[in-house]
Image (cartoon, rainbow, N blue to C red; front, side, top):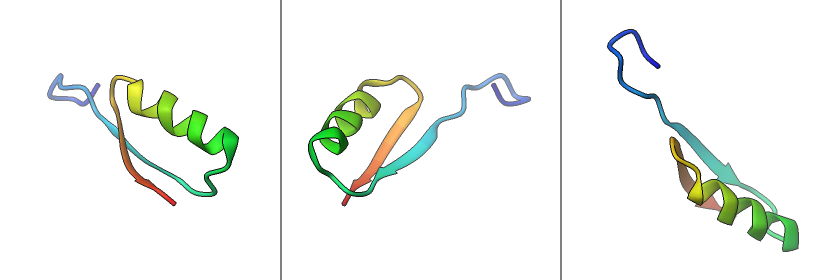
Length: 40
């Protein structure tokens, strides 16, 4: 949490989307506090 008490979010990009990359992107997108910004 930040000093103001609000939760921080983490911006994430997944690079190299093979079978595992697709799974990582799906899992990251479902996580609270994570913002999936790109899949390359």
